[in-house]
Amino acid sequence: MTLDDLRVFVAVCRAGSLSAVARELSCTQSAVSQHIKRLERTTGVRLLERRARGVVPTPEGLVLQDAAQEGITGLDLALRRLGELARGEAGSVRVTTGATTVRHFMSEAVVDFRARHPRASLEFRTETATRGCFDALAAGAVDLAWVTVGPPVPGIEQSTVVELPWVLAVRADDPLAPRTRVTAADLVGVPLIRLPANSSSRAHLETALARLGVRPTSDTGVADWDTAILLAGLGVGRAVVPALPGQVSAQAQDGPLRFLPLPDLPPLPVGWAVRRGDALTPLSRTFADMVRRHCRAAREATDGPGC
Image 1: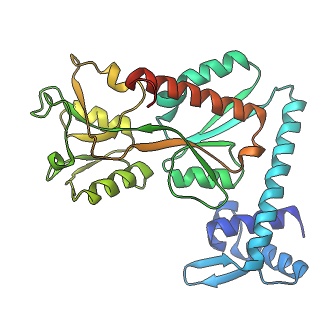
Image 2: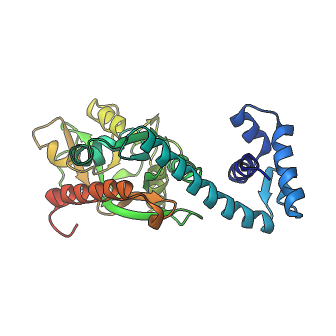
Image 3: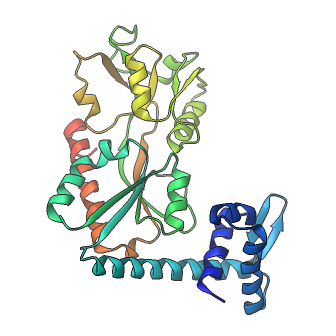
């Protein structure tokens, strides 16, 4: 049994496919299979079960997967820290999140962190969906993931930092613009700019609207919230988006856009996801706490204390 055997086994459990791991590692499926067979010979048990759409770990495989993932993550953290010490660095924090998240939720915390820890490394990895962030955490590729908080995910801890109310973004000359708020009924049959495909925020929104009996039509899809707001300002359509920190106040009533509250919809919870909170490095915990403080301060400045 080798460390490579365990790494490949964990990767196969995560991907549910030998061929997918072979492509990822630029090797043959036979080579991946040999790693699994060697582990099965060593342990004396069957570790994977074939299904119609790939493979899943057996009960015995789940035991090894959990232990191997824990050990690999701990070893990788140790090797990473040793490398930092050898280079004379003070440590690093690796974050994965969406394309526009840093600007909306982390910019002040980044400046604060850099001022307090000038020798530390702060690295960002962009993912297009919450699922990709969870995969990066599970693989030990990052320390922190900023996500739309949702149902429990095995092996992942989620913590809501702020809840974002939904607003309807419209041009200042839109017939709805003079309103102080809109209801879900106002969206019936209204073409809306759709949020990013496969994103948790889009799933959250569409589920909430469906529960209210609203299924808005749509011809336009976008890659991120900022693009949806931009297109709304250009008159391409209307967009239901989360009220991002500082955004509504920045777009004063003399601006080109109006953000109309949608109180019928439950807010969107966003925050941190980690593999294990008690295993975070002190630097990672410091950065996570800084983001939390700045986000909550921004939300209170917009909505008042207690929001």
